[in-house]
View 1 (cartoon, one colour):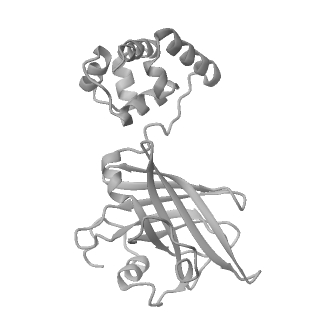
View 2: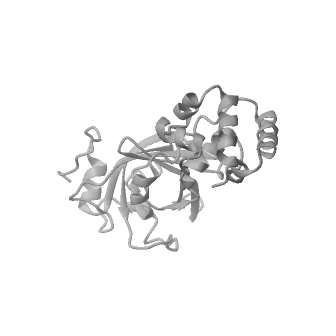
Length: 262
C-alpha cells in the first residue's frame, strides 16, 4: 500500500477532531482503524469506500501525495460545508449478511388499488461497488383507461439487527417512496422473506398504506420480462397465491419473526 494512505488518513482525522470520533461516525473498530493510521494494515475495499465517502473524497485520493489529497478535501469541503449525509452509515449495513439475499424475488402485498386481490411485483437485489441496489417493477391494470401501467422503483438495501431494509423511490406519477422491512427466512421457509411494506397507493388519491408482504425467491439471475402472469393484480384465491403467502397476508396479528405456523 502507498505510504501516502496512512499519512493522508491522519491528516483527515485531525481535521475532524479525533480518530476516535471518526471511528464512531463511520462504525469501524478503533483497534483496526489504528492499524490503518500507522500503515500496519490495509482496509478492505468496503472500508476504504466508507472512509473516503465520510471525508468526501474519492477512493484514489487517499493514495495521492498529501498536497493533492488536501486539495481534494478542501475543494469538497468548500462545496458541501460540514454537513454529512445522515444515511451514510445506513447503507449497506452488514454487507456480508446482505449478500445472502442477492437475487430476484416475486413480491406479494395487499393494496387499496387492488381491493379484492393481491398485488404481485418483481424485485431484484444486486451488489455494485460495495452497495446493494434494488429494482422493483409492477404492472397494474388501470381500469379507467383499460390499459396496464408499469411502475419502476429503484433504491438501496441495508442489513441491520437481523433485519433487511429496502428503501426505494419511483420518479414517475409525481414520485413516491416505498419502504420494506423483512425478517431473515425461517429454516423451514428458506425461499420466503416475510415483513411489512409502506407505500403510497396509486388509488384512491395517493394515500399512504401499509401491508404485510412476502418475498418469494426465484431461480433466475435477472429480472424476467414483465408479463400478466408474473406481475399485476391476482384474486386472493388464485392458484398463483400459495397458501403460505395468502395466510400470512391475511393474518391480522402483529408481525413476528417466527413464521412456523404458515
